[in-house]
Image 1 (cartoon, rainbow, N blue to C red):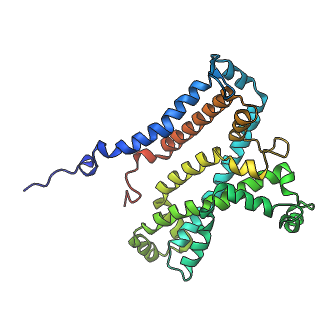
Image 2: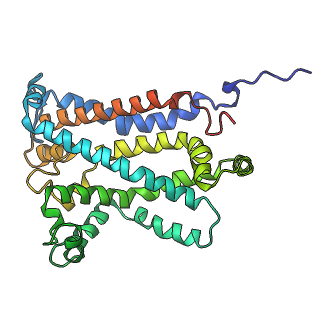
Image 3: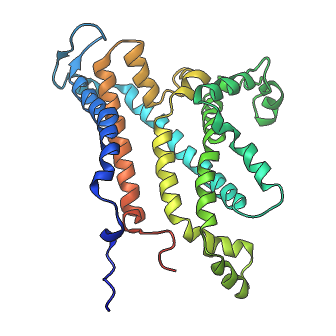
Amino acid sequence: MRAAPHSDNAARPGALYAVPAVLVFGVFALVPLVLVCWLSFTTWNGLGDPRWTGLANWRDLITDPGLLHSLRITAVLTVAGWAVQTPLAMLLGVWAAGAQRGRALASALIFLPLLLSGAATALVWKALLDPNFGVARVIGPWIGVPSGNVLGTSGGALLAIIAVGAWQYVPFHMLMYQAAARNVPAHLYEAATIDGAGRVRQFWSVTLPQLRNTVVTSSTLMIVGSMTTFETILILTDGGPGAATQSMPFRMYQQAFKSFEMGPASALATVLVLFGTALSLLIVRFSGFSRMRSTLEGI
């Protein structure tokens, strides 16, 4: 008796399984997105009815000199956040996937920041970086800030936001890398050991290629998350000093809830969505993620 030919569709659930997710996405993501796009063509202060103004908000946005600055700050936070978080999360995740003594306790301590909200994390770090009463008064001179006012300098404020973001989100991505590293077949390491490969060579030649799927997924989440960082900036620096940390989400908040200009704020939000979507599609396209079927493919 001939076995039925293997088909990818045979093992997949029907489209009905996706209905709840599609409904939730439509109600809580797609509908608000369409409304924001529509508001970007209106003028509205939050009261009364929005008034249609056509492309006026978009023309003002293009000629706004603050747009390029907020784009640059957002790009710096996104690239630096990815560059700091990715190696840390990967190395910690691979380490946590092992069987070292005390690994479970150390992993639990590393995961603690995941229990805190973004606002609580920012409040804790704002107190720690206080130049008068925080630890910044002690460590400030060690890092080139004798006064301890780390948040009072442009570079220090940006570095603080990047460091707080890493402290908060590295544990989450570490968890992803830990799960992926545990799925790497043991016989690959046994074969590498027979070939004389040490731990470093095994990491580059066995572990890292098998984590490719996870690297793409984690990087996409990091980049989109860094682009939308808001509460950390609001609480830690309030966009300062001056405009040094005014990213696009922070600028959008200022226009919407301080100037009550919902139209321009909606145009800025639409630009942010377009940038995030384009970056995600580029990552998927050029990383080959769409062609991957499994982390173990190719073994």
